[in-house]
Image 1 (cartoon, rainbow over the protein chains, first blue to last red):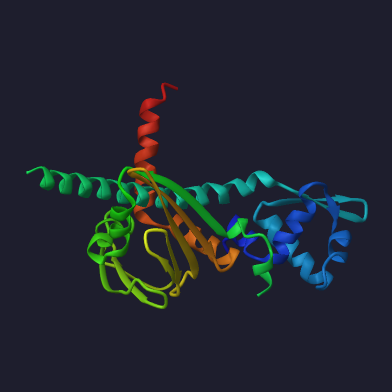
Image 2 (image 1 turned 90 degrees about the vertical axis):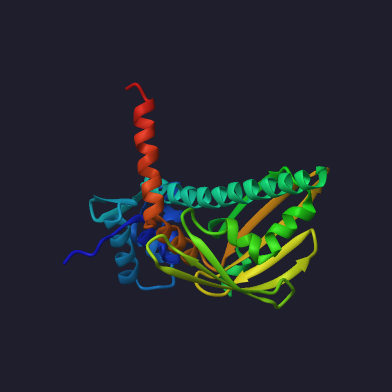
Length: 113
Length: 154
């Protein structure tokens, strides 16, 4: 059984978002990342594994260190869907606008009779 | 809650629109159930509004009927009402969010500002994901794709 991983799952957790923020500007090794959080190293390793599975970070081995770097291009998927959701509301405003203007014209028409 | 002190950019949506009608009419269309039923909800949906008490603390119960027969219940509570200026309501059924709609008269036109603030980033993403699954939207995207392919000479 394989759990489906996607970018939404990656960013659904506040710790994972914090990890992405931390490595967004420069890669860090796993120990440095873990030292920044109040949770166990194992918990951080699991978060990093999920982020890697979701394609949001690359993990590279340098000697004994494992370096994590962000793949921020993957986050575009989220902004694309946020845009779709925005489009939905824009289209609601289109409907509101059409309806209001139609109503206005109808009422103006009645006044002119 | 901890997240309230932080920046809200990752869980909000803001839209503005100038409507070519006086603010009295736009307000009427927003606050009377028989009008709101005409334009609310995704395309292809119809609406039944069983309750809409436009005053602070007033309840608003709206059911959207999807094209496949599925009903989507929405319950909200109006938090703030300033006639012809402002409506704030809290969507209390999931997903939880607070919407603020401001009306500004500009001559015979109305500037409408629409702001939705979700309780958490997780809820916002959940909504966006749910929307991703929306069949109607997929169809629209497919239509758009077909259209773009037809237009693009490459």
